[in-house]
Length: 164
Image 1: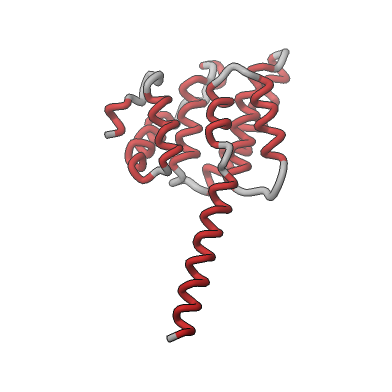
Image 2 (image 1 turned 90 degrees about the vertical axis):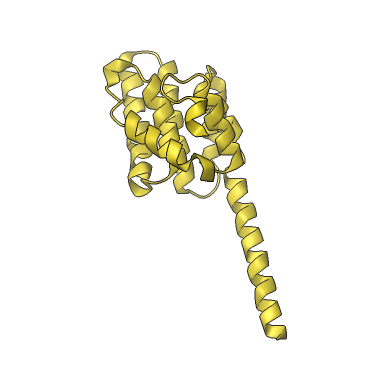
């Protein structure tokens, strides 16, 4: 009986620590979305610098790829813009391919595709991403749901009433 209590206590502690570590890895979610949707190259650079620290995770690689795509907007010269956009695109799409049901990755792609210049032709997944976002909205972490709702208020395709 005492052994069972120890095992249960240990499992509870491990779950708590795992959740705390997972939360820490995305503690800059608000800052990430502010940079993604904002107009500050300095904030994008700050987020990229923060992402370079620590262990490489799928979330980190997805965030980095998205930030590189966004940073491309601020570069001078079409060749530089395209080079960085493609580099970020490849990294980001690799993470989506590895995690196709990850609603956050699909939300990020939706935001980027909805706002990408038409010349890039990076808009082919809007409808499927929209459907997945709406389907998984209720199961998203609260801070992500908040970011989705904020974006839905300014989006041309995703609307707050779609998320209820």
